[in-house]
Image (cartoon, rainbow, N blue to C red; front, side, top):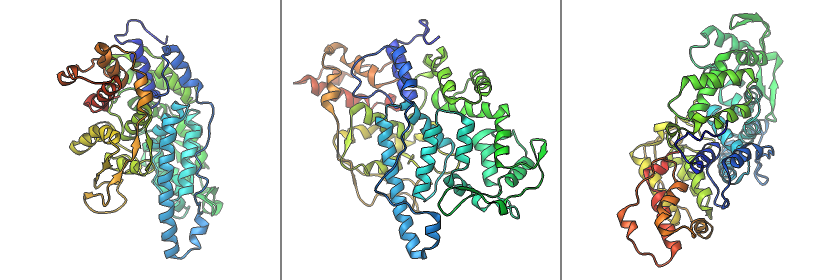
Amino acid sequence: MLLSRQLMVTEQQKIQHLMRRSGFGDSIKNLVSQSFETNFSTVFTSNSKFEEIYLPDEERVTTGELLKMTPEERKEILDDLAANIKKLNLEWLKIMGSAQGQLREKMAFFWHGHFAVRVRGFAQVESYINTVRKYALSNFGDLLMAVSKEPAMLRFLNNVQNKKNSPNENFAREVMELFTLGRGNYTENDVKEAARAFTGWGIDEDDTFLLKENQHDYGSKTIFGKTGNWGGEDVIKMILARKETAVFVVRKIYKFFVNENVDENQVKQLADKFFNENYNITNLMKSIFESDWFYEPKNISCNIKSPVELLVGLNKTFGISYENPQALLAVQRVLGQMLFFPPNVAGWAGGRNWIDNSTLVTRMNLPKRLAEAADFDVTVKDDMNDESPGGARKAANKNALNCSFNWELFCKRFESIDDADLWKTMCNYLLSPINLPLEPENLKYQKFDVKSTKIKTYALYIVRLPEYQLT
């Protein structure tokens, strides 16, 4: 049953909740109001088409080519490749805000944090994110196998150094601990033996997956109590055969898409279905979004928006266009989430970690700064997202945002709304909370020469409220 009429939220609030959680919010272009059922159907019918992200004019340098260069040449090329990764960042950010298949991009964004990698090879990062996007809504087993063979993953977790005479346990450990089973559901011996099974998993000079047979351990291994001449694919299949994997993955998806405070009974029910349906990701998301409990008040406006969700949501809501998209990299950095630059293999911690005294002020002031097309003067925190060492530092140059809002189209949505209902209507559109904030006295009695000025003033006030930081 998609809708329960007993829920204490309106149909419009359910639609807004669905669009924010399954994607990045409603688009400025969607002026026509549609039913919940229509929106629900669109969430799942709009993702069939997959197109790779590809930057045609950027240089791709293989590992083999890098090895032939002098140290000076290599450093220069690596700097260029790092710049290309940032261009890829901005391209994906743009796609998140414009793609018809919002659920694919939102799921890929989730998997990017789940299967976190950070390498300097542009072609490797490009391949990795396209693999994540391709399998984002298909089968978790296929996604796991494909990501495990991505050059970026094998390099980031040191499996290119995993050889039969000197096994490296890093990849095997993280596959179990962070990607599938979770702590407590495997032994140290399982990690050691699995590492042997993954020996020889590497990449060739053209940056494609290669099983280097002379480096692979073909001896007998005992993993999860089963003995055999196991290889890497066997380990992944054994991991998928364990129910703990379904529970671990579903719990993490639940925290991201539903509520940081997990209902373990709901997770168990979802995990049972997920496991029995061979890890079908699309079916799992349908089960979540069609459940009555997903639309309960306790699951609405309960999670803090990540910096990327905040940025993309603003872009979609106001139709923002940027003359200098590079400034968005500075915004990502200061807010603590830069695509393709996770702090570590565990990805971004999320939740309340997104908010501190510095970032909260920046987040709340961001919409006004964007609307004013103002310079964005940032202080970069000393964390893993900062590419250079050292303590907190002031950005060397101001980052001119140079952007424009599509106010004409935005105002069109509200121009027919009576002034007495404008505040409530705009809050319902821009905010998630069930209990909406009261209209401030200074705005209630302020005189405006034209309706559009009032709409703009209200909009910029509302998106600077603490409630706008929630989804």
